[in-house]
Image (cartoon, rainbow, N blue to C red; front, side):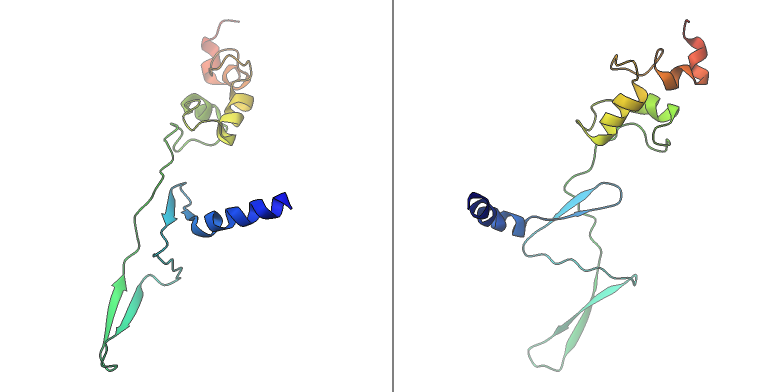
Length: 134
């Protein structure tokens, strides 16, 4: 019974929280008075009919560039995920505790010293590892 009541209380919140997440991680929240259209063609037009019922007007709809949230730059743009270069470029905690941060901790910072460098498996196996003392 408690779960049903909790669900009914949360239903208005769920009904109003429409967001779009783009491929690059940007997020846009759709307002209650906005509509979203998905079209394969490059142009989308809106038809308006005037009160006399005979006159029409066509207006081109321009795609929106608005976003609410832009993910922070973690320094790894262009680097292959998980590679030595990626591990060197990644800024720990730049995004908070995310799956990316978890991967960095497990896959890059293998000696658990909260930095990537000498002593970490990928670093020691790379060309940069030659500078590390044995």
